[in-house]
Length: 230
Image (cartoon, rainbow, N blue to C red; front, side, top):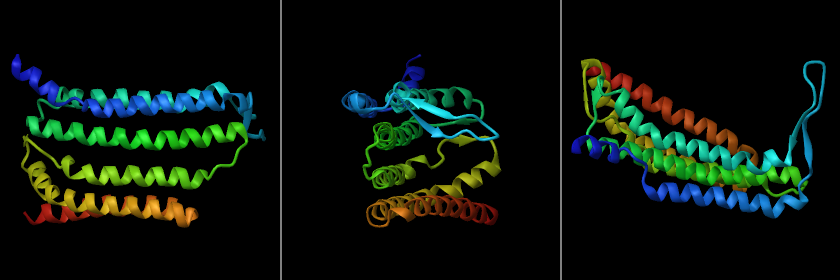
């Protein structure tokens, strides 16, 4: 009984992560309250044509959409490690250290979302108020921060525990060392996106999408080649 309790505790998101997410939600709600008097009752996001009608968004939706999205994502990621441990119990046996590492990775993702979602919230509220803040720079910078945070935590995501198949074991052994390199590369992409957002905002999306794709395709291809040699 003690072991099971310990395992479940080791799979929980760190409390500091939940605090960061809660503060982010509060900040977004405060921003909505401050901007509320200047927000239009509704805005048209897409004009009607032969295929669809006019799409409108009310200020009530704009005010709470991102806070609710962050709450939902945090709740989902908070239960993911425990559900994974239960559902995959017959497939692999992950150590307490592995479960804690997995929870830290998910926690880092939540922290990154706690930066990204407020940036998106500011952008959406700006559409409702008609103001023109530097949306591309704000959102691009937030994406860069998210990628840096994920890159720092990526080495913790390397496969851990005992597996039931020799093929899976070879892939795991091949993947392990690549997560550190991939983490450094992902952090470098994040810094590149951050710099591009501030200097040349128009290419920030290309840097983000292309960089992330190269990092993970590189990890996958290299791991597959190494696994075949074993």
